[in-house]
Structures are given as C-alpha cells and as structure tokens.
Amino acid sequence: MEEESSPRNIEKMKMRKRLRRESTICSCKSPLPQNQNSRCSFSWYEVDLWTEVAKFLDGKSLVKLAATCRWFHSVIMHDSVWKFACLRDLQVPAPCQVAFKWIKLYGSLADGSHSYKFRDNEKHIDWMRIGAFFFDSQVALLSERLSLPLKIINKDNVEKALESSGACVLSNIKKGIWIADLQLVRCPVCELDTCEGTMQTLEVRNMELFLCDGFQNASWDYELIGSYKIDKSVDAASGGIFDLKHIKDRAMAGVFNLKSWAGKPSDMQPKAMITFHSVAIRTNLQENQGLLTKYYAMRAGPEGEVVSIRISQQLA
Image 1 (cartoon, one colour):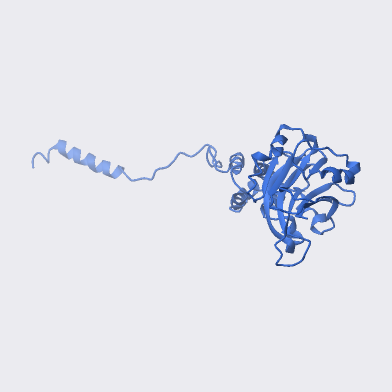
Image 2 (cartoon, rainbow, N blue to C red):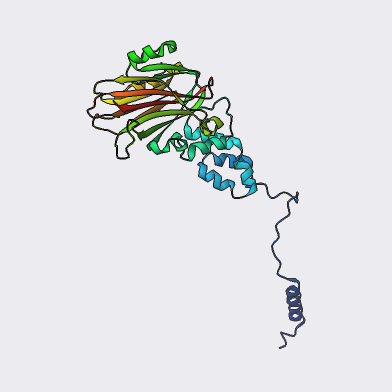
C-alpha cells in the first residue's frame, strides 16, 4: 500500500489517465490533391486508351460497349473506329473515299444480307460469303476459264470474244472495296418446286451498293451482257473476276493453280479463291451435257459506273 501511494507511483497513474484522454480513434484521411477538381493522375476515361481497346473488339462487342453510357457512346461511335473494324475484318486497303458512314457500311456487311434478300428471294436456295477484294482500276476481266494463258479481249468486240473464249472485258467499274458471294439459286428453266435443278452464281458488288437508293428502290437492275455455251460434258463450272490492271501480279498465279485450291474431282463442294484484286470459284460436276454461262452487270443508272457483276452457270 505504501508503494502504491508513493509520489512516484501516483505521478505514473496520472500520466496514464492523461494519455487515455488524449488518445482518440480517428479515421484515415488521404492527402487531398493539389487540384481539387482532378480525379486522379490516371483516368479510365481516356479516349486514346479505349480507341485502342476497340481495335480488338468485333461489331457486336463495340455496340454493347457504346450502349453502356454516353461517354462510351461518343468514343465508340466515332467513324474512325468503324472504319478500322471494316478494313480489319475485310482485310483490304482503305478506299480514297466512301459515300456513307463506316458504321452503316459495317452493318450492311455484317447483318447477313445478300442481293436475293432484296429481290427474287423465292428463287434463292443458299449462299456463302467468299470475302472482299479491291478494284484498283476501272477495268475488269470476266472469265469462265481459269487456265493460263488467258486471252485479254477487246471490249469493243464482246460477242465474238465470248464465242471464242468465254471471257470479256468490262469497263467503267466503280473503284474501291468489293464483296464477293457465291449464290445457289433455283434453275430458271422450270418453275416446279420439286425441281432439284440449281444454278450457281458468282456475285460481286461494290461495298456501298446495299445502301444506295437506286438499288433499294429497284431502279438499278442486272443487264445481260453476254453468254457462253459449251455443248459437251465439262468437268467443272468455273468463273473468275479480275482487276485487269493486276492480271499479271504474282498473287494471280495462285488463282490459276487449280490444284492448290479446287479440290479433288470427287469433291462436289464449291470452292473459292480470293486475292487482293480477284475472286474465283470452281465446282466439280458429274457427267453432263454441257454448261451455259451468262454474264450480268448492274450500273448506277443508264450511263453510270458498274456497281455489281454476276457470272451465273447452269447445266445445259
């Protein structure tokens, strides 16, 4: 008791009470930034950052991201984002100019549309997207044969050229990106629903075609520019469309090398080959009595540029 009541112990007890009173629990506080309005040194809302991220997203993902908030909508809906997405997916160079926004062009390519969806849908059976290529010049070579050497034909003598070789030269082509599809349609010879006859069509079109008023209101239509008939059995139905300016390019050699892509004679599935400046198809056939090939062109008005080409083939 004496020790506890000693002056020294009493002083220690007073000091402990004083420390307990002065020691209080307080919350942690981060130091305030010098600029009260700035969020932080790193911001998730960086346009350059999300523009770069957008390069790795497909169309559906881009739309979903744009729908999250107004800020993302303003970034993702910028035309440069959709231009990059288009050229990335199509794997073609950029055209000098386009008449529509790139998001609309992307939508017309990715929504599963094909020309028979707009007209003559009752004749359509099936289709396959081949890819995209680029018309660098305004002159196209259409050929039923895919064997070298190809005869370059004078465009002023189309009928005689078609009779001799089954190919022709078509001028005033709209430059830019073109889309290639393989269409399978009902044979036009008869109208019976039970008819199993089919006709294959290699169809190419300028990327902007489906957005043009002339196509949508059906004022632009396909015009027959020539035909070629073989009156004996043929091994395959082939067709190719080439940018004549690049006909001698090294990449073209792969198109004419049928063994590398056309499949074995017993393989009856259609095959396709596409390069930067050409597209070709080939389907092996069973024993037959011949083949009829027809060439069609669609122009943007009576004297307009060619905006779509078809090579249709049916058994004779």
